[in-house]
Picture: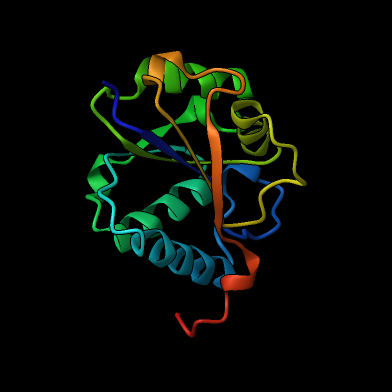
Length: 169
């Protein structure tokens, strides 16, 4: 019997505008968002097994702050250049081929619009897209290798731009 697999799909926190898109850093508001959302995820009292992110600075920093709040070893964050503005197809291949089959909770941090399209593809639920530092929690009874269109159930949204006033930083 397969344990429920939970995928925590996040958009990076707010970043500065810059001509060098790959190296954009988080704004002060973005740092607050990432810490706050990380705390909200930690409230679920789960053990995050894996964290995957694009190697773009803003996604890596968002993942770093999430990991810090979750007590996840930041050395174990999977950061990959091919996930930078990755298509839904690339994200789905990563889920199907790279996630550890024993993992039940995996967090991914990516870029809009593709990270939001991933939520729509997996759940069949249309929405306006993830806000900065917002996470969509989806789950399925299927093995990671079997995740495809409409195989997951949408559970909830966590965080987002409204969470930036908790006094952090």
